Every structure is written in structure tokens, then in C-alpha cells.
Amino acid sequence: MAASPLMQPTPPSPVGGARRVNESGAGSILMSCSMDNAKHVYALLQCLSLGRKKDQLVRCDIDASGLYFTAHSKGKSLQIKTSFASDLFDSYAYHIEETLGFRISLHHLLEGLSVFGMSTLASTSVTWSFDESSACFQMVLTDNGILAECAIQVIVEDELHDFTQGDFERSFEGSVVVGRVIIQSNALQEVVSEFSDLPPAAPVVIRMHPNNAFQFQASSSEGNSCEIDVAKASPALIEYDTTTDIESTFQWSLLQEALQGLAIAAETFIRLNAQGYCSIQHMALVGSNRAFVDALLCPDAM
Image (cartoon, rainbow, N blue to C red; front, side, top):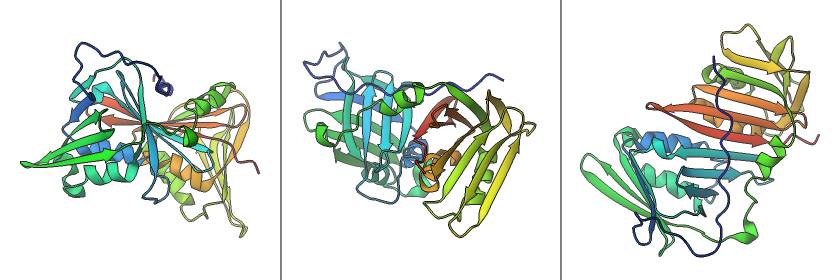
């Protein structure tokens, strides 16, 4: 079976200077897109949630290829990116040539999408647009003939608190990948559910062996431990390849957040590089298209 596609690169940060507007430009509305099913959008964005903070800001980068929302953990040890390629939408229009970037409240995005209630997400259609003149990300939601509008103020310039886009990708791609596995997401979810009672700071080791198993091992300060092997012959494994023994340790709370995408994914692609960095890509099916949730983790310095 062909391997899942590699991680999609994060779009570059917005470039200063005069904007060049495409012929189809629409005044101060720089982007507009629509989708008939808000449930898909909600589920993908929810994968960016880090804890339960209502003030969490995520970065949004937009260009002609789509929208990319990125979240970073407080200690910058974890990056999660949700990609909305333009072909996921029923309609998509982007009216400038440069990449557009800003910060936006994740809580307000999720709250706006669920304005009619969680049970109606699948029947709610959503239209997104960005108005440069007001620096507002606008949503229009329709369900059963009822219309709701939501405008979210964004932070267009936030250099003091900005985290350089692409640093995580460079850290991972700068070292050779020595282990990779593609596994059915529901099977991996069953594996990690065994660790659900671990304390947040517990270390979890991911191991890959050339001739043996793909392994998760966890231990707690109370002396309890749990080790789960996924055999190479397991039907849940779609692809497995490692050239040497490799292991890396991660804090459970960060790994747990990186694995949030398992709930909506069909396949999950895990890679370890020689420096111990871990890439986890979840591939979700959205109608006849695919959407991706990408996580990159720094190894725990223990």
C-alpha cells in the first residue's frame, strides 16, 4: 500500500509591503470560503485545543492553497497544525498573492461554529471570510433556514509574542528519519487508552525496532508501569520501517494532546528522527477528500 503523504509545509509568515490583488479581488475581503458541514471544521479545529483555556490563541496562515491553523504548547515543546486545503471547501476564493497571517481565539472559533448546538453541526453550513479593513474573521452559519453571523477580532501584528513559523519543521527535517510507522488510527487509540490514568508529567517512551515491535512504555512516580507492543504482523500496521533501534521519551500530557486527532482519523503516520523528535500526522477523510492534523514534539529532556 502506498505511504501516506508527508507533512505539508507550514506557509511562510506574511510578508510586508504593498499587496498585489488578483483580478478577482473583492475590496477589503481578502478570503472567502464555504462548507455545507460544520462538523468537519469543528472536529479538525478541536484538535488544536491545549488544555481548557478559553484565552488560547492560534495562528492562522492563509494563501491560495488553503487555511492553516497552528497551536504551540506553552513551553514550545509541541506544535499542532490543522490544514484546510482549498479543495475541502465547496467554494474557496483568495484575492491577494501574499500569504496572510494573524492570531485568533480558538475558543471563539469553536463557540461560533456550534452556535446552533453540537447536535446540529452536521446540518450547519458555514461561510468564512476575512475583512482586512476591520481585521475581523467573519462566520455566517445557516441551519434549517436560521442564519447567525459572528465576527472575531484578530491580531494581525504580534511580533513580540510570535513564534517563528517553520522552526519545528526545520528541527525535525534537519535530522534523518530513522523510524516510521503507519497504523490504523482506531487501533492506536485503543493502545494509548491504556495510559489514560497516567499523571500529566509521566514519561512515555516510544520505541521502534527493526525486527521486533513498535512499542509504547509508560511509568509513573508511584512505580506503576505499562508496556504495549504492536507486532509487525499486526493487521493494524499499514507500513513499518526502521533501520536501527530508536526510542524517545515524551511527557504524557504533550503526547496526549498530539494524539487528539486519533478520534477523527483513519490512519496515523508516526516518524522518529535521529535526534528523538517525533512527527505524528493524522489523516482524516472529509467526504472524498483528505484533511491532515500534524503534530511535532520535542523529546523530553529527562
